[in-house]
Image 1 (tube, rainbow, N blue to C red):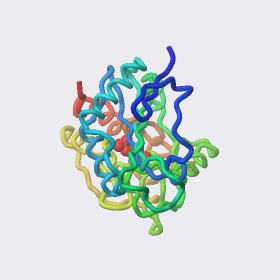
Image 2 (cartoon, helix red, strand yellow; image 1 turned 30 degrees about the vertical axis):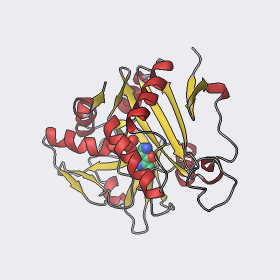
Image 3 (cartoon, rainbow, N blue to C red; image 1 turned 120 degrees about the horizontal axis):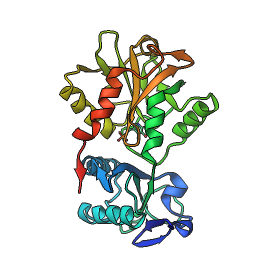
Length: 286
Ligand code: PMP
């Protein structure tokens, strides 16, 4: 079956889908995005993802290209036209097409909207989670506004590629004080020897992951104590468990950091319980 993409008002063949060369996303990385999990053909946590989209757009003073209701229709159409049952839907909004100039274009310039969807084999994610992943640590060289989900992801791209070259799957950014901020495309967590869950506060330094927020509720349901505070690489190395969260990873165990084994080197009970319970707490929008 051929894939379909939504581009600025039309559903087009994925292979031919394109935006203008002077789209500000292409020229300046001047845009934002969201990724939602699709499960059983339905979006997971759509409401929260849309709320974050509105926030990101507001911070950059980019207009929402259509009402949230209309956007919901486009997202559902794109999922349906690609016959995605399990996978993800991606949406990107940029400041639109205009002659290349750093200043914002005329206020009448319509923002660009692109939506794609693709299937992901859930068994693959389960296999990865069953093994656990390795991460490396890298200096956090990103700008301060990582709370905005911008498409400008060059530091993340370089960090994740460095992880891949090192035989790892994710890179954890470390700030100037030696504390882990987050992963290249995930939030970072540890479980202390006392069994407390630790993740960095989302007020600054990280993206407020939707999965992170939902996982706090899952932890509460499981009567696990969560402490929002920064943790160092040394503390992570001595942790009982470590894991990452994101819309496409749920909670995925981290079993090695910079080549050193975490816990007994196998996925631990806390991350397994969080992962298993995630979809009972996440909202499935029908
Ligand atoms: N941090 C970064 C840098 C990310 O790119 C992502 C995933 N987009 C996350 C955290 C996790 O966010 P979410 O749980 O909303 O997928």
